[in-house]
Length: 84
Image 1 (tube, rainbow, N blue to C red):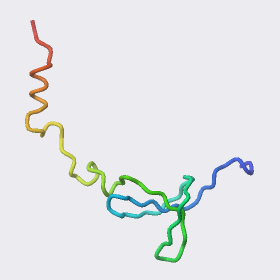
Image 2 (image 1 turned 30 degrees about the vertical axis):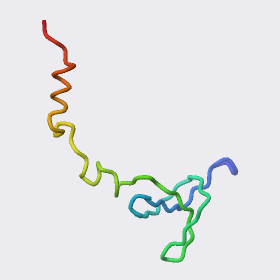
Image 3 (image 1 turned 180 degrees about the vertical axis):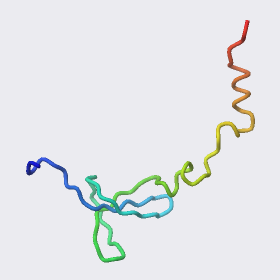
Image 4 (image 1 turned 135 degrees about the horizontal axis):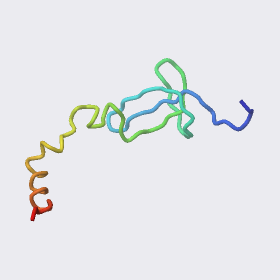
């Protein structure tokens, strides 16, 4: 690899702002904040709006389109193609 052209690839702490879930992974994302971890390491901090711990698809709280109280059927009845 050539020197000086690659971004810094390092461990970064990502925190989910909706529930406080933290995880550490390697990334080259730019951050201005740092966080002190339980083991004493100080890592760059990146704040997320949602993660797999809070996203409805991964938590199982997402509702299926078919189970929305007949709204899909109403739409199809109202705007569906009329057979002539």
